[in-house]
Every structure is written in structure tokens, then in C-alpha cells.
Image 1 (cartoon, rainbow, N blue to C red):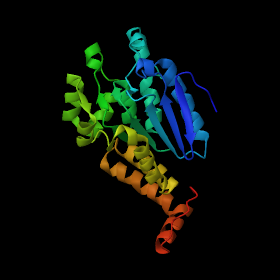
Image 2 (image 1 turned 120 degrees about the horizontal axis):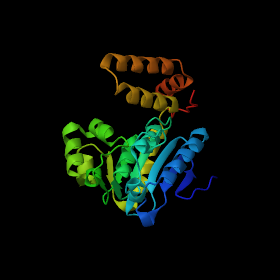
Image 3 (image 1 turned 180 degrees about the horizontal axis):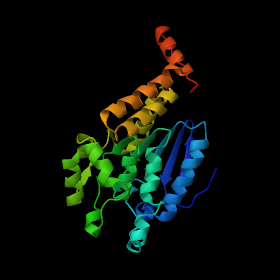
Length: 260
């Protein structure tokens, strides 16, 4: 198992957890932390025993409270254009071939909120607060915040949150579709693992191709998106898993998928 300074990587059956472990700094995201997340992603990608990845923060106060302000103050224009910045790490998470869940156990602000939005599914504690307060520092959300938030909650609500630097609680986040589930803090991990279990019960190849179809299709015109969907289905129609899934349904038994 790889040892990190700023995160913990925990493997639990078919699940892997990346836990941001800087609770004294509200799990703020430094350049070094992002580098460790990238390294952990590569390890999890190669591990065929892992089928779902969960992000969370250490402690019960903060998921991730955004970028480290000390490092942020020193950034230049060229840093914003760096190919290894926060936006690029979050792009890796969004396109990660295994499903990802954000277990939001407290404050998810700025880069922390953007990390959650890069995940496929977001489950929040009732104590969670989410927001993009970057304009208070005279910068904008630039790790995907101006783009992913619009696509998730719509332009009007995204502008309201960004321009006002508005923080919202878990219930409002659920109401506007920013999170899909809300749980009491003591039940949060159980709820997240329940969600993960529902995903893991599906055909793994279908899960992978569904992610591709949704992520790529949402950024193109309808005609192109429908063709991406059709091609993904063509792959699945020729798979052993499709044969197993349909046969198991007809035989009224649980399918045994092989991911091929």
C-alpha cells in the first residue's frame, strides 16, 4: 500500500476511499495534495479488484475547504494555464473509468465543491455546506466550477451561487440537484456504501460505457450524442455480460458479471 503525506488511500473490498487528511487545515487542497490524489488515482485504476472510488475528508467538519490560500496568493497567470493544475486533476476524476462518489462530510467550498462536482454522484451529511466563494478573493472558480455547476443546477442558480459567494446547506443542495442523497452524519458512510452497492450490482462494462455516453454526450449536439449512445450500446450488445444479464433475468436469478 502506498503511503501519502496529505491523503489516506483505503481499500475496502471493491471500494477504495481517497481521504483528504489535513483536518487542522480544514482539508485544504495544496499542490502536493493534488499530486498525491493523481498518484492514488493511477494506483486505483490499475487495481482490478476495485470497482468504485469514494472521496471524502478526514474528520467531521470539512470535506475539503478549497485551495490553500497561502499557495493561491503566490500563483501567477502561467500557473492558471498549467497542465497539471486543479482543473486538470478534476478532469481526470470526471473521466475516471470507475464510478466515483463524493462523501461530503462537512464544508465543501471552492476547490472542495469543485472536487465533489467532478464525481459522478454526491452524497452529503446534513451538516454539509457547499459553495463557491472565490469571488471574495477577486478570483473565479477555475477548477471546473463555472462549467460543471451550470450543467448540474442550471445557469440561474449557478450565477446566484457564484456571484453572491453563497453557501448552501445539504437540504438546499439536494433540492437543486447538486447532491443526490442527504444523510445524518452517523449514517453517512453506510448511505454512501449503499449507493456504491447499487452501482456494483450492475454490469461493470455497462457502468463504464454509461459514464462515457453521458460525459461525452453532454458536451455535443443531440445527433452526435445519440450516435455515441448507439455505439456504446453496440459494444454492450456483443458482450458476454449482456448475455448473462438477460439470461439471469429470464431465469429469475442474480447475474454473475465478468466485465467482458
